[in-house]
Length: 118
Image (cartoon, rainbow, N blue to C red; front, side, top):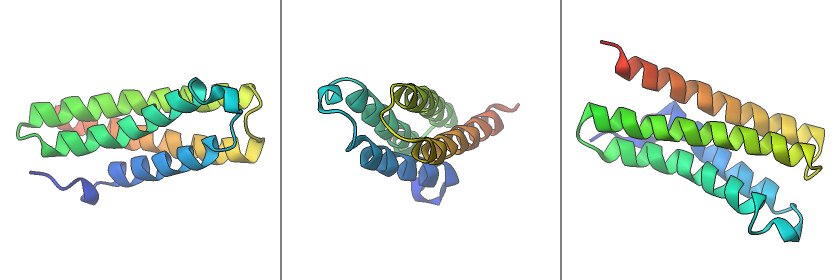
């Protein structure tokens, strides 16, 4: 079994989930079951799929779950941009969260690509 705590991708994804929760506390109340919920679920899905992939015994399963985590990270990236365009947080909050989401996705993508090399 792999230790997810040793992966930079997990460290970033975990930080992203925490920051998404902190940031979305200030979103409008009417978004509780809309964008707030979507963004939180996608952020948690990113780190959760890394953990689940690490618990799998085959390299193919590991890569599959990391690929799902990458998709969730890209989903978070889009939702951050949408929330910003809707005025749910300011430019500096957007920039910091966007940078973390982008870095998380880049690290995950690199990890997936390295696992899929012949």
